[in-house]
Length: 385
Image (cartoon, rainbow, N blue to C red):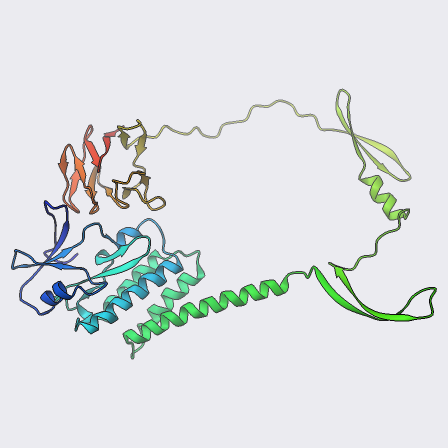
């Protein structure tokens, strides 16, 4: 968190991030007029002591992947997007050291994962050091079930340790890593295909004599699977197979099985008798208790089973999904401090209210029994059981 940061939601519904300003710089008016792609828009501020950034509806990297691990494709898009914005910044004389590469200030457009970076003219943190810390965070957020994702982040992190590290070298390393991984996957696929048993293959049969005729011929035969000799119809092994496959069930008082083998008398084996027994219960599921929400639309009870607990419309990312167009993808978050549950709005488009009062962005409000909560127009009642 940067010292002196402040969030503000204005009457026009737009949300702004304010960062402390101590001097005038050429970057501020330049970004306001040129609006470089991938750089967080700067608005004109009525305050002379603050830079003003519009963040309406934007979600940061830390929030997006707090619950869901990043796969290789997402990492590639995010890292490539960051490096592309940094490279584009040079065209506008923007210093790499003034881009904030903290996950809290890297904004993503879901589901395309387009990257927007915050340029703070007075930040002045070494670019390589920031990028190293970012890759350390990504290593903790990566999906460890994906070998490609781990290899990609680790290779980029090791590239930062090189003495001649540059932005171009890192971008080349990212592309090289992606190509190597794709090639490795292709080789594994080819190997797997080559190891499969061949169902059909061809063979030359040279100059076979045809019985009963005084001539010979050369031909190719298509043989399916492994070459097999079909047994004679009345061979011993064929009769044995048929006899052993014959199983008869008799439904007298009890169920018996009769196995027939050639030359062996029939043996009757009674089926096992099962006595009725009662299954011993090891445990009984306890009724859920704790803080919860009751939907005023359908009466559904939503228990807050873990913290932080996310609410929004983005299925797969949220702990509780509200499938309404008015609810933002990442709408609000519940956290717990001691025994107190607090609610905060995640820069949602239509806001979060508690007992009719709209919350400011990132404001944390303690909840008590009976509080009425609105996520946009979805109403809930909070209680602790």
